[in-house]
Length: 344
Image (tube, rainbow, N blue to C red; front, side):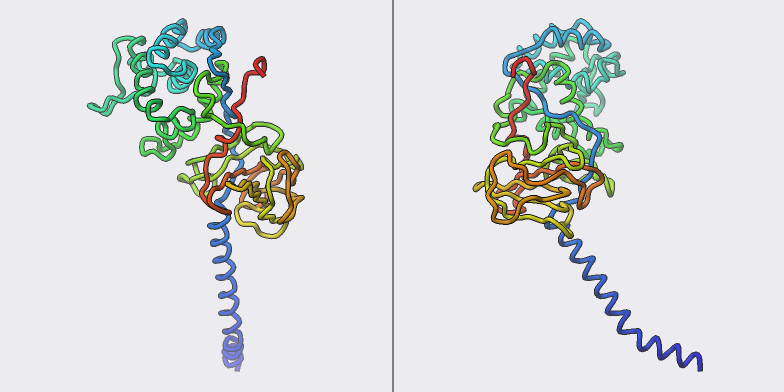
């Protein structure tokens, strides 16, 4: 009798089980589609070099000499770097910053024993190139930087880093390349800031969407903070604390305003139309604007949060072309590069 009752119960419950499974499948499917449309998972990263300072033509030779005085084999080599940079028409600060990073401030085996200041490989052997002297190594590195990068239009640290130290490269199993851009940027600022190509580093069209230019994750390929491997980060992450004001980078009209519920990986977010482009502000805690509102440049639109796929308080900021959630481009090209305080 018990077996009969059990069979009847299973027969009655069968359709409900299938319906429940179907509903669960639909929820998961909607979530996946929403993430695909609204953006990938975001995380707060502790790796930050901020934004490179840049003052055209203003080389702080005193500061460079101070930094090099504590940089192993580079001590006393300021003029060697300066001459090599002048010979090939490149920024000496950029050259020195890359050399310091590649050699652990002049202490690596490659620079001490092979006079190789830039991790330069010999294509004929597949091994690190050996130079007769450190001067020869610096000269070759400067020429290589010009030929392979600068002359090809790759002039910013981010542009160079994407080729010099690509994230996810087969020869970088521990993903150290993810540190290349922020660390070289930090060193360049330590040296007094870049001195060339300032005009292509940012147009100054946008105002800061947060209170400071503190970058926690740049646009482009990075280590996937959730699933391992690499992912393409579609925007720039700005550091902020819970409740900090988020501002419109430029004037425009609100076309997306997600104040509650599920907003995909972006969480609570806003998109502003500026006519020829759109800006997105993701992971906000509170959204203060509605679709159709007109906002002014610098107007508060909400507060910093960690909604959506995020592991810490920050603002995910995107620039989109061609439509809402359209082609993403590097937001930093729209901001004015920082200058040294005495030059502001």
